[in-house]
Structure formats: structure tokens, C-alpha cells
Image 1: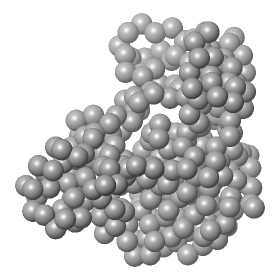
Image 2 (image 1 turned 90 degrees about the horizontal axis):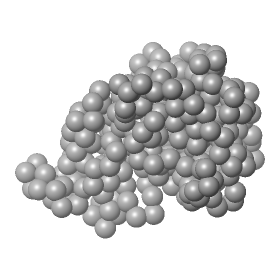
Image 3 (image 1 turned 180 degrees about the vertical axis):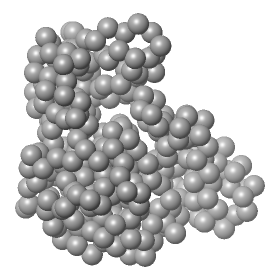
Image 4 (image 1 turned 45 degrees about the vertical axis):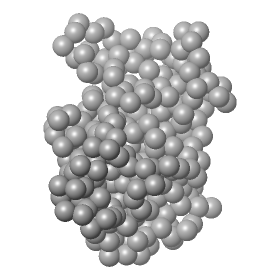
Length: 297
């Protein structure tokens, strides 16, 4: 098994970054990650106002996957995610969905057990997930804190152990990176922070040759979701709907109008996050109605 240290951090998805590891398809890889604040917040007296923002929103990588070429799909199987016994959540002035309010900077350290996080005496079931995950984009450079067709800071609470992601490959080797783990996050990530934690991710990669999805695709036990983004929630929802309708047209060889109608019955639009410059929406379709091939062209 290969381990990639959290010391190998990048802050943009870019072809300019040299690979920190080379892996074969099927090889088990452990990726160590730092939290979204770069480990700079250690207690409740530490404020976001004192952060070195150049060390925020990093990801570990990039990892070169042998055999991945532009036009392929990189399949990422998340085997396990481990997190420590505490995390941090903050509020940031002028950030979050209620950014227009007068928000004071505040910090909470949250204790984490094997099954629960304790927020001021209220216990929440933990659901360790990956906030930032993706491949190098076709564009020259995208900050790890942003998102796009390459993935990035998507903040999808269902990106957990035993899920799979399918990314379009834009660069040789795919140049994969991941970070920004959360012990708990609800859809939306309203205040701009979840329970931010460092940790370890165990993954395996596979390559699907000469086919790629329009947007990253998430596979869970019961469904496939297209992970779209836009400048507004409306735009993100529209792009997710369009991609889902296209998948249904391919699955059933239906005309647009028929697939569009079926989408009203079988496609669930869900909010990923509302706090980044680009907003994220996923279009989820039960595996009863589609298979993976419908999302690849």
C-alpha cells in the first residue's frame, strides 16, 4: 500500500504541479489530509481573522494514475475515511449564505467519538466525508476552494466511504488530489464551515477508456448523482437537470420531451453547498432507472 503524506499539499488544481506519487489502477493508496484551515486553529481562542489564508483550502496531491489519458474516466473508489477525536467549526464575517448579516468571528472545538460529534451537548451522528476531491482541469488553474467539471471543493455530504466517483480526465495521469475532510456536514454547509478535520482517505483508482462524464458522477449504494455547479443555484440546478435529462435520453433512447417528463418523476435535485463563489447541485437518479453507461459519452 502506498501512502501520500499531508505534507504534499497543493492549493490549486493545475497541470503545473508535479506528481507527488505514481500509482497503478487497482493499487490501494492512503492519502493523509490536513483540515481546511491548514491546521492553524488549535483551540477556541484561535480566530479565522489571524489565519494565513495562503494555507487554507489545500488538498493532498497531485497523484498520477498510470494509464489515464484525456478523454478517459477516472473511477475513484473510496474504501475508508478516518478522522481524529476532535474538529473545528467557525463563523467568518461576510461569509456563508447569510453573509449580509453582522457576523462575529467565532470558533468551536467539537469532540468526536467513534459514532458521534458533541456540539455543545447535542450529539450528531458522524458521517466522515471528503469536501475537496478531483482531477486537474482543462483550464490552466482552478483554486482548490472552487469547483467545476473537474470536481474540486464540491462539499457533497454523500462522498463517504463505500461510495465511488467518476471524473472526466483532462490531463495525462489525471493528476488527482483530495482534502478538506468533514466529520459532519449538512446539505448546504450554511455558515461556510462544517466540522473540519484532518484525517486519512483510502482509495483505489480504475480507468474507463475513451468515455467520460459531462460532470463528475457520484455512485452510492442506491443511486447515481451528477455533481454540477453554477454561478447561482438556479444555474447549477439547470445544468444538473440538463445532464440528468441527457442521461435518461441515452438510457432509454427517448426524445427530449419524454426524458424531461420522466425527470419530473425520478430525478431528485439536492443542494450540495451554497457558500462558495460557485454553487453546487446534484441530480440524483435511482439505480432502478439508470446505469453508469448512461452518464458516459
